[in-house]
Image 1 (cartoon, rainbow, N blue to C red):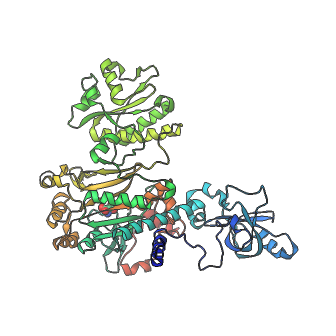
Image 2: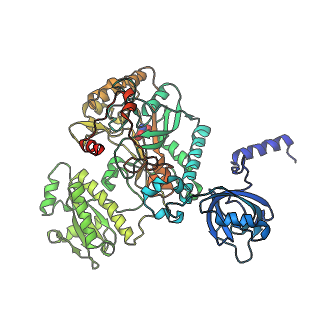
Image 3: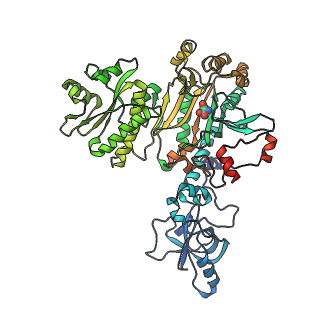
Length: 626
Ligand code: ASP
């Protein structure tokens, strides 16, 4: 039976809406096709292409490039087209040209199967040099080998590379899908929040912006945290923003003073709800060419992560977990073991490096031990399991046969493995072994053992963080493990008032292949509890946050959220070594823009309206004089 016409039309419309149409790259412009588009099916068509000269050979042909690909253009040799030949043969590389011509099949045997347009070529009929490229500071094809500083100085040239084009276009696609998932499928509202705000307590890393009122400064927020909570008080219910955040952290190799978060907040939500939302979001926006991801993501408590991996962001792509061998060695007659176990948090732990004998040199082992010493002040003992199964270690003579076989069992030691053992305070021992686990993995891989699958994506939730941690510079004082707005774990609320160091929080981090790619929490929505945390536990002046605390008193809904670090996430998806490879105009690791040379000096006159004077360090004063 034929379907009624109206229904057929409605079905077609629905199908068209469901399947996103391929974008039209040639709308509004004079080109007929991009340089990556032409195929055998286009043979015979007259086309107009615009692009950069990638390559030119002996006045016979050239390769034209744009964001989508490469097309071979045949330069006409006949007298009637001598001016076209003249023009195209003399166009310097990287000049921008327009070529009009006819698509022809490549002569038999000359097809290039590696090139998507490798079946055709365009026989040029007319051409125009739109802008000639001056002599480049280096050859574009060698660009990738040049120093990062030089590439950043000429960022607009580096942006022409397929590597950066791919990364930025993939980033845009992922963000588009995220918007679609959040707004269209789940009713989120995209709201922009101010970037000129004021300092927040504990916000030591904020950039200051002078104002025209003497002595008053704005601050660039580290994240839209306060605003997104206030949006919940304002009844927005589900907020998201592709938010620019600022942290003045000085020089750090893989950090940027400005970076982007996918910032999310929801009312009436719990931890599990946020986790399911993020899993769905990532699954929806995951680029097809990177395979698929499996949800729900596994979850691990902070305590487990620390005990087994020595870090709150475990790389779960490989084993080599930290093993507690305290009980195996408790009865042994080893002085440093007994000493460590006599303290309340004393522990003996070890990692077993598979085939360490084969893949690690003595120098490697020396450097591993040296790094534990210099970074964690932690001594490391090694036990080598010889190919015949016997132990080679300074410890051997102190270990009974029973202890040796229990160690083998606990660590699942095989012949040829190397064990690194540490004794001391639990957290220090775990942190040191966690760092050695990663360093050894790098060494094993450098020596040729395939340990981590480079195409694997291991997501992990880390939960049940402590609400507060001792301050690094003064361990008798506490600071928030996440931020001061994080709510305590429902079962630990009473501890907040009796022993805050024991309170677990409703803070969750998302980890991908050993990198933190997101973090968030369920928030405190009681003004009384928020004031208590700020004043009594963190000893902060709650006055600066009076607007937020007051807002909580006017019927604030329970709420929670998360922020994903977009730069890091994309750099992991495209397997780029640095987040700078997925940012169009990144800063150097000293926080400088090497292309435009920012930050830059301003004159005393320009500073006057801000009531600011520069107090020059002595050496710079001298340098300026000379
Ligand atoms: N604002 C937090 C951050 O930037 C994330 C959150 O708690 O939602 O880490």
